[in-house]
Image 1 (cartoon, helix red, strand yellow):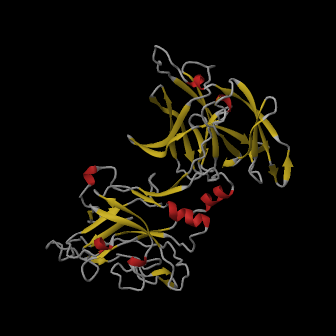
Image 2: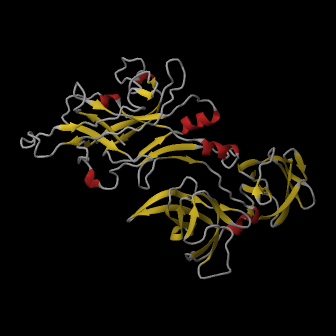
Length: 469
């Protein structure tokens, strides 16, 4: 996809510009929210960013050169992300993607009398397809209220000044990737405060589109979903579903988190209401009462225990009782768990020597090394963290992260940035959804933060995602 401005051989006056429109399928995101896989119940907001990869982002030598079409690569410009407006009668402007193309056939044969003079004659003009959607039509039987969606001189029926601009991005060199913030836009659609959205558009600022007197056409190119490479555009949704269970290491003088995990026949379930938690000592005396848990993710309920154990002796055993357990209108008996209050000194080392850096080893389950996985799976990947060269010494209180990427030659293309691994009383794990992943070879790095160091272990796990026929 190329956005261009400047000189044009096909318009009078001799300048023109293009715009790009697209839509996003939010059905998978909506389904994950409805099923509580994605939850904001614990006070975490969703953020959304739209990404497109620049076709010239891989080689700086491409800067200021010409594309195969003869257009010069643009530099120093701004792109806007705008919402496609409703029709003047407030109906949604429904449009089809279309089957358009843009190319010319040139006659270079010796029979062309003007070839020797250095001029080319376009004998078969295929500059554009008029099949909708296009600059004028949304479908075969309907048109845009304003050709090109809006008028950049503010003298049409739909004007630039009336557009909703979602975000704006500056491109200094012209080889930067698109990274638009769509958080408020997508959240508004998800919660129903924004409606009748039929897509979005990307364009140069009107001040750029309206430049006249140029002798060349300037453009910037991005990969679309039709690319044959890994660089399809995508909407990146970020939310916090981290589980940091302190049941095995509940320390006084700080906040701690406890969790309840709910399953039926091995599948996580969502309770009708959030549980209520009471904390009591071993004699049955109530320490904290009526704490309402929140939903961290589907089947996982979190409670934050405030720092109320300052004057309590340690180690000392306490009980957390979870009540208000209702599933499909059926009341489930209270669940009582226990934890041991430990002194903060358990996490502090004071002495005359420094810590010796530790080396870790990792085992995985849920995905096998070099496994071929269909892009229909959702995998729970368990990570066993242990001391290197040891088969027995498992570690239960480590801050570890994972990162997923693919390789394109010598370049690592990030799929998921460093994300903390979930920690429960019995395992470390993360969830990997293959359904939105492009078939390729994937690699997993592990990073452990300890002793003031951030040690990265490269390519600990490798697997392939393949298409299902």
